[in-house]
Image (cartoon, helix red, strand yellow):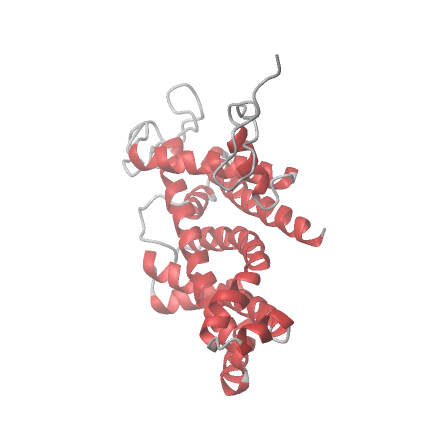
Length: 300
């Protein structure tokens, strides 16, 4: 006896037999493969380090073994051991607690400064690249003046002038970093402005703003994201450098750069500077690996 034919579906076509159920985790794996650079070892390693640092930042935000700003929780210059995993500093503060608490500060400062530079630089770059004229001339002249100064020196000068503090550090680091985003998106928009899909969108009656927002900017974001990841490594180092020279965030707040500065006069107590230095290296390395992997994927 033959099996009955499959019932027709609503559109007149035979309904295909149901396939085997999806393997557990199959959807997650498919989504992972669609991520840019997901097949790159550098991106995977960078993401792994970033997850580790984000976890440390979240934990340090709500819990540390000791109060990171409390001196005298141990003897001064106590070497790493069971009671104080990273040792203590010259004030007897727990270095592990300070390093963990500072993870949130440095990571948050870096991400916010990069986000502001990304947003402002993208808007200015899109305006300069699409409309050109006097707007392009003014924006590019100011950009050239900014880039004529060493970035770290300019950041140091501006923070010293404005004064230390969380907001000033974010604004200055974002301001110093935005020319890179501006130039990159300007070049992307300018290059794509004469492409057929752009001309077709204009002929269809779309305004310049709509063409930018719907076509040019989205198509130019891929290299900008790659640049942002690499730039974040530089921003993390600049933020720590400002803290090291004493013009970073408010004194007393846990921050890796100021922790390293606190140990520079105690070479025998190497752990005071070693562990925050390693944390900076991990953060900058994670961002650099992400950016490098994404750039490598674009090149291929």
